[in-house]
Image 1 (cartoon, rainbow, N blue to C red):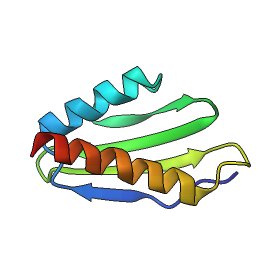
Image 2: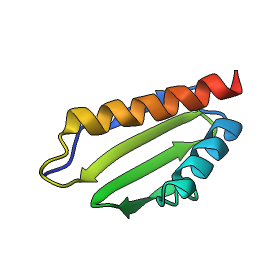
Image 3: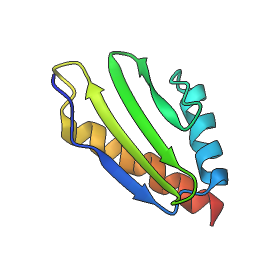
Image 4: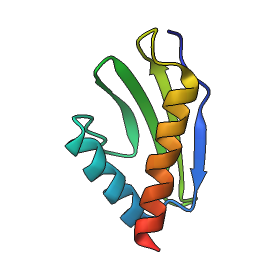
Length: 88
């Protein structure tokens, strides 16, 4: 499958980013640093974090044909919003 549209999230503090890094590592997708990409189970995610603006942009650049962008986008949103709720 080709890549999916990017998703940009606002209000991502360093604490929220650290929580997301821990969740990613636990799922086998190490998300470290402010920019990069990682792959697990055929899904490749690229990220760009701007600590000054507190924004995080996540892009699925590749996934198996049976995993539609809608599923990836939904899971990413669920993960980020859950992280934001944890820190509230």
